Amino acid sequence: MRPTLSRLYRILPRESLKVNTNAEHKIKILPRPTSQLEEHRKPTTIDLLLEQKEKAGEAWPANIRIEPAVRKAQFKGVRPELRKPLKALMKET
Image (cartoon, rainbow, N blue to C red):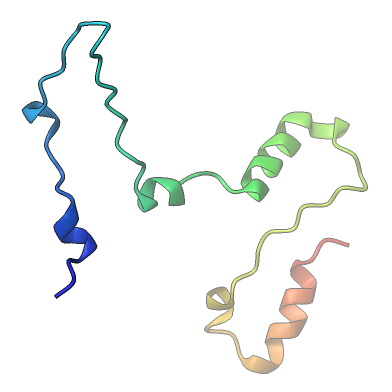
């Protein structure tokens, strides 16, 4: 049988490591990687642009329009024949 990747390594708790303060044998402990949930909470580019637009106020260029992302789930309860006209109304002209 071939060993699996999970059998080849073991995760140790930080408390079990004895870190020397000696400059010669200093062990570098890397921070824990960010979870997918934390990465998911990062602001999107559109959110950042909307924030910049609010800060700029009247100084924001008129030729740059930011339209909100329209998701399929938002129109779930709308009748199918009315979806396209509603989407067209939501767009900035």
